[in-house]
Amino acid sequence: MFARCTAAARDERVKAHALYKRTVTPVKENKDAFVKDLQKALYASKIISYAQGFGLLRAAARTYGWELDYGSIALSWRGGCIIRSVFLGKIKEAYDREPDLSSLILDPYFKEALSESLESWRRVVAAGALNGVPLPAMSAALAYFDSYTCDSLPSNLLQAQRDYFGAHTYERTDRPRGTFFHTNWTGNSGNTQAGNYVV
Image 1 (tube, helix red, strand yellow):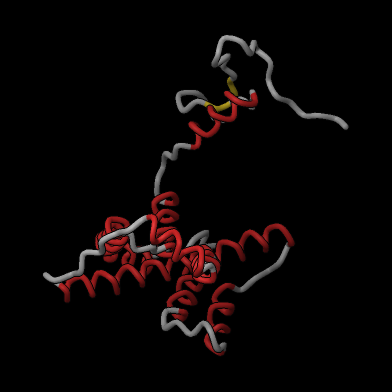
Image 2 (tube, rainbow, N blue to C red):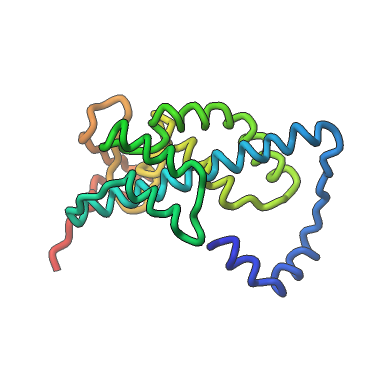
């Protein structure tokens, strides 16, 4: 949607382009290798889009008490006019192996496919960034993958920032989960902590 909305703002983009000229370096050497990188990067990004989609279905099922057959859902999309991916059958197989699979990323087939594509995916996203070529879906998919597969995210930094501006408290990685702290960051805010408000 981001790409479609941005494409629609052509007049604005033309003005901005005049202000921020860029040089795109054409791929001259190893063109065939780069095309293979593109194929792997696209495949990995598609896997992530399905992983995110099925994650949303799982969240909705938990929220609304739905009993969903994810494998059947994947196969039902084969009959549509938009989604006809060959690997919908692989998604069905993944849920046949583990009906409670929390993410396609954790399935052995998709783990192997993503592992084989990862270096290519990084090269393509890096080439896009270095040349100013927008790859919003592909780069967002890679960021999602990197976040999902990282055991230590910088969320504690976000908590610290929230504590600084609103005394919302934070957890520390060297203390048990559920133990919250507040710091008087500026020396002027005292020990006031944000709490629940009754209106």
